[in-house]
Structure formats: C-alpha cells, structure tokens
Length: 218
Image 1 (spheres, one colour):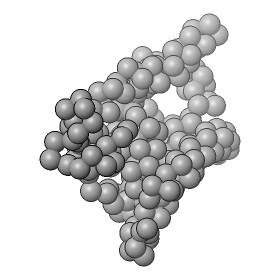
Image 2: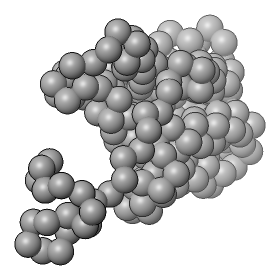
Image 3: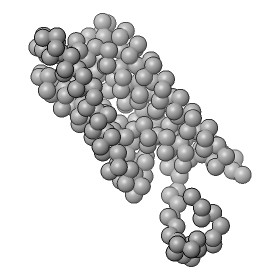
C-alpha cells in the first residue's frame, strides 16, 4: 500500500509523463503533412525526386532510432530515464529549429537522421511511467501513456496543416520546437525519478547473494 505522499508523487509523475508524451509526439508529427512542400521550397521540383527525398527523410528517423535503441537502453539503465528523455527533447528542439533554416535537401535528411540518433523518447516515457507507478497500477500507467502517444500523431498533422498556411512552412518547424520546449519543462519540473533498485545477482540455484530468496522471480 502506498502512503499519501508516495501516491501523490506517482500521480504527479504520471501526469507529467503522459502530457510530455502527448505533446512530444504531437510536435514530432506536426511537420509531416508538408514535408514534400519543404523540399520543393528547397529547389527540388522533379516529382520523383520530391517523392524519394520525402520518403527517405521520413524513414531515416525511425530507422536510426531502432538501430540506436539498445545503446540508449543501456545508458538509461545506468544514468536513469529522465536524463535521456531530457537529452532527446533538447536535441529535438535544436533539430527542429535547424530544419527551419536549411538551404539544401540533404540538410533536411541529415537533420532527420540526427533526430533518430537522439530519439528513444517513446519507450523511455513508458519505462518512466512503469517505474513510477505502484505495482498494481503499472498496467494502467503504461496504457495511459500509450494512449497519449497515439493521440499525439492523430492531432499533430492536423495542427501542422492548419498552422502552415497561416505562419508559413519555416515558422511551423519553429512552432514544433515549441511543443518540445513545453514537454521538456513538464519532465524537468514535474517528474521525480524514483530511487533506482539495486540489481540482484543469483548463483543459478535461485538463491540471491546477500538477499532473501523472496521476490527473486522475474
């Protein structure tokens, strides 16, 4: 059973992670509807070239993110998930602003690849929610953050489609960076990372070294 203090702590963490996931995923998908137009504005006019640049640029971020996921997972185990989420959000802010001022098509592609290298935002927020929640609330906590992660990409393209004609393509990238700023503030000031649990080592017979056998199951 959790105390009233710990109960309020995990609920505050849950709110922070859920809102940060929603806002972050919204910002990530904000520019997708007009990415092809951005390439045309950069001087790529052939239809096939526009399609290729757009396809590769959209695909490179998840590809690089997937390749780097094991690396960031190990880093997160050592230094904590909050620090890595902050790292991702700060890099996304910088990358989105840089995308607003690129002058060549390959610049946009390279920045999206860099964004993938610093990604890992989604799985990390799920891990943060799970580690913060009481044992009987873990499934609910993960499900809530997953819902937020799905709702963000639902609204992001709509918001981007509305903003682009009003403020212009370049300024919409800057607006997307603003979403990451809000998410960074939420994670930094509202989320308190719970104490890390020491890993248990066993001798293969089920007995843990220096720790009673109870709770040694996976």
